[in-house]
Image (cartoon, rainbow, N blue to C red; front, side):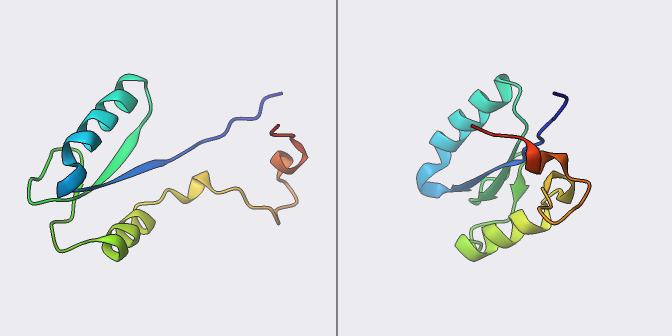
Length: 89
């Protein structure tokens, strides 16, 4: 079967978990998984979405929604959607 699923991965970062998120990001990137980090620290990083310390849960979620690639969506109402006929388990 030629079905291909596209996933988009977001990680939320804040001061208390900063070092763990760096480790997780590096592990996922080295495994070939494209990751978007929404960074809510005052330590901006290249390649991350640096939103600053003023953004927490709402702001991070809002940033994720604004950066979401809608081509990853599975539309269950589409008549042309063969994925509905595919068993996942």
